[in-house]
Image (cartoon, rainbow, N blue to C red; front, side, top):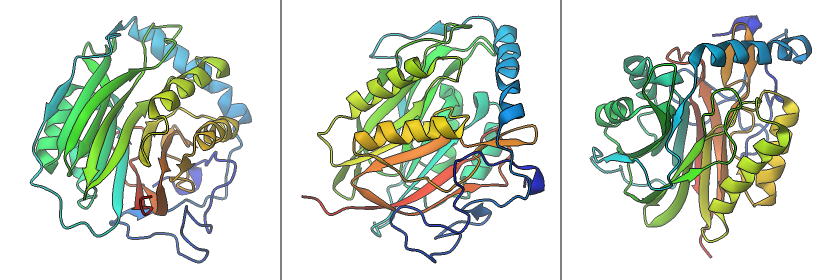
Length: 321
């Protein structure tokens, strides 16, 4: 898709390495639907020095053109939900999770086609959604869902938030308000959480969208701290995925370190770039887990509905204590 123009900005792209619990020599793709790859090779790998200098300018122009947002800063809502799942197939021991930031929910029909590639996905995590787009995805692909908006975005005047979709039953949904707002627009960010009962296993699941580098590293760490406080230690099986806006290798390392201290590992390690701006690729989207082993991960490189790519991971729950 990107050819030799794609830049991978992880500190180490595992083109021939392993993911999670997969052993060496496990191949580039494991149980992947068509169009999926583990990682990406490119002879022109940018290390971001000149390119990163452009990021603040691009973000500034974008936000100034948008105006100010109106936030839903209450913890209880609004909330939207629906039940369209026909029920999961017989559980084969593997949980497939997909995360996709569908930029401003602007190309939902195309995004539905792309997500249809993952017809065996148990859980889909969505970001930058509105309630109408979320319901259309869930209804078209037959998932139950819960959706919370964070704000009314000034770009389009619609709700802007995160969703969790599942073939398995969803219960106890909630919204986590992340501290600090965007200094230009005043927009806040959230995480959406729910318990998903996968074949009798309670999986605490989060769809996350943290702020861009407009926030200082300290304030971004505050957002991670609030999120991880919510995760806590009560649940053995945890999935936390979404758009973390990690534009540099250092920010990825810092994110991994914070999550590792809470007992969560990056299951999506090795997927390569997950978003593109002009000819540059960034690894912005991640999936972290606790109590599970990753046996595969990748991106849908042919996706066109967003500036992000859908990422996927395959997880095997560890035996319960």
